[in-house]
Length: 333
Image (cartoon, rainbow, N blue to C red; front, side, top):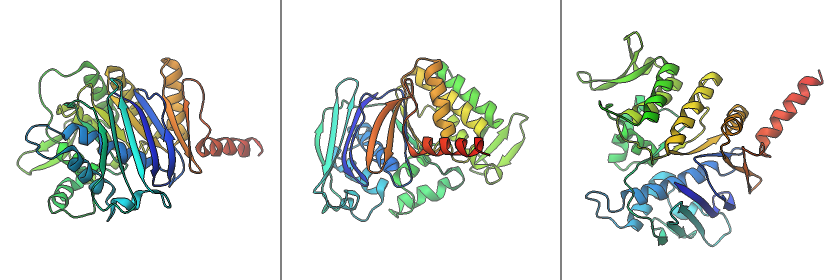
């Protein structure tokens, strides 16, 4: 589990110190405040640690990181994501076992980042980034673009596309089975791979088959998580990053989705979730209090990052402020 994050001069973020992180971590703030920068920087570091010395990988950790940053941010030069007017950016993550991974680069950097410290042991578990947009219906196009080294779909998209494979039979983690049952109940079925047509289809609980193109984006988004839990790509030490968790989901689905996430977090899976939704914040607040669970919140606003805990209080943030303003408008009618 990642225990702390520290970021300096990345994109719109001058400085961020996370404090102690938890099994579920929420990142909130207005557009262009830095939420996705944090998720992408974290993802690049985690995938570097995972791929370094794994299997037949011969690249150095510096080479892996540089490629990950380049294809994840897809800027013509890495230096373009350094905060304007600053000499360098830096990113540090530490684990609960006191491992440390730190990288940095300056505004003139083209593709090669520096790894200043890496004491992480080889990591066998996988991290996955679930974007706001569904990718299932364009999976082959995403993989093709990556193989052709074309910009268009960021690295988290192509990594996720490659991770989607058939579910496997046999015993799975109890929490994964429970989470899959919640998701399957929510969407009314599961993804199946049609071997003859070489494509994914959606099969509902009455065994009716639907083409992916006719399935809603929300159903596809949730079904992707179900598939990853069933095909053994994830285990109980995995890290799941979800950007704009509420995208394309009805509020009732969001509530159930967060319940499934809580089940997975109990088993050891760690989550980093970004959101614009007061509904998401409030639901996590209730889960935190109901289960006496610490849920750290990194709240971005006007170039600053404040840290709070939903177990203790609702955070100060424009999302909360706007919800309060809406309530005041209502009672003034």
